[in-house]
Image (cartoon, rainbow, N blue to C red; front, side, top):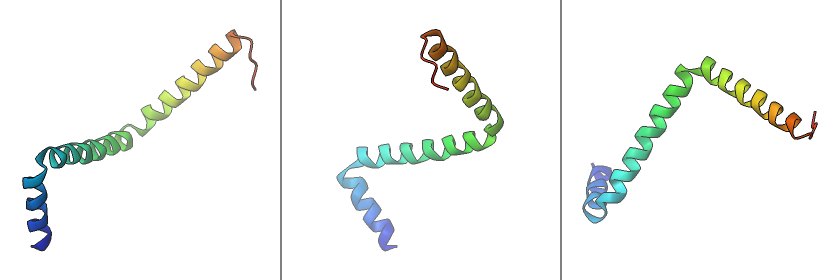
Length: 65
């Protein structure tokens, strides 16, 4: 109950801060869920970006590997 009262005090003092932190936390949770749900496609994306990086570096003549 004490925490709830403190939250209401923060809400009254600075409502924009509370709204932004709520949006940030919700987007963080949704983003984590999305990554877990699409773990395979995310792995494919990493593989694609590494391949793209290799092509660009070899094209510029910087053979790193």
